[in-house]
Image (tube, rainbow, N blue to C red):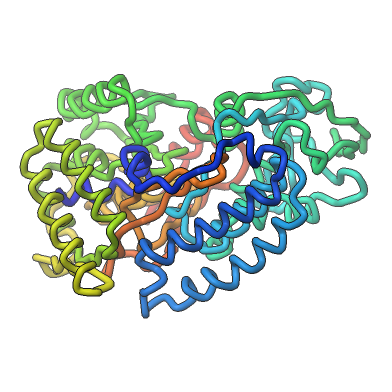
Length: 489
């Protein structure tokens, strides 16, 4: 039950159809009036979050209610000048991004075409913006430095076109990870870089960017590759003598992904002796943005034993408050129905009873349904020795969020495990999402229904590795070579 509740963002996929759908005008009615569409959706986002999200009534987080009001005014002012789909997206996204809550998500219509100039760039640890993918623009070599476009240096471009819409300012290092979308746009958007200067092998060169169409799925795949995610599949593999337990996602939406995870967990059991005698085992969560945290618990149990994982999770306080609203009650009840159809009767009963409690709280004018579940065990260091003779490492990059962080909560407390790589991302204490279609017909909104009260990590807290990645592309070969050279006290 607890593992299912950690699903976080992936829950919005299951719950996105929840809704007393507001009557939406035909898309053609607002298709050419992007300012009207933006205003309509910003107002809907404000009202929906006000009435259904835990944040507006959370006395422990007054900044949420402040941005709910102030951010709306700023977004509406920006929306007034919208003449293109890109303007609409930026106005709405500036509002949702300003909550600094990765579980509030505005999704744009998949039917909208995107564009890219054949290359993608990303800021490195030194703050330089470099070419990290050049599939359709080989004339600009990989690792070339972007200096400026259209008279604006790369830092100005980042501040104008990325930071307000993609970067959670509570997570400073996430700025570099967000920079990978700088060279993307909506098709036909006039606000995109055209004439750019690069430094190639010490020489400055001018390039006119050639923008071409890219469907959303393709562009997402390109961004995943450029940012280091989406490369490896779920599996156990060996690279230059280093064993990698590859966990690029816990968001398993297709049966093939579930089968792959089940196969991995079985293989970890079958290869237990080999792994426990290996000099290096890497728990590799590069690119993992979350999903169902139950998978992380199962992987950890396969490696270290269920008793060890139960001891760690028993030290966590799982107390939560569910926001009481009619819309949330509908979402929870529909979840119960899906679980019942899937044969998960115990979980279905829990959610059916929770829906009843939420409806009762709404009728009584209460803000929350409180679910107290304090830690069962005292927080103590590991008492058992590691079953591994060699070194076990948790390898993270900046993508690690949501259920990936839940896995890190466990992995960092396992006996003998050392956290290496890059600092993780972070997430808010609000979780378990549902969603609605926005009234313009151009997008959807996903929001959290519950708030953790005593989570092991505070709001937007990330994890710093004990040993930092030295820099450069985090390829398998480079990581394996680096791991073999690490020394520990």
